[in-house]
Image (cartoon, helix red, strand yellow):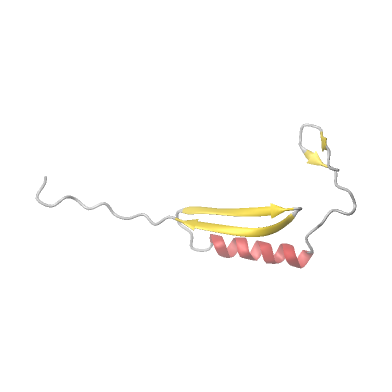
Length: 73
């Protein structure tokens, strides 16, 4: 059972908590880095369950140039 301590919000974990291995952390960071690469407008969301990154979502927005209406000044 987790319990909050102090105002910092640090958490106590039992020894049997699931932890990501060093390789899993490296893979997750690589995926986040890849999702950020080339992104000009948008968001990257990282979903974590039990201390392990389980999903990386990338939403990209493409800004279009607004055209002036024809025949108007």
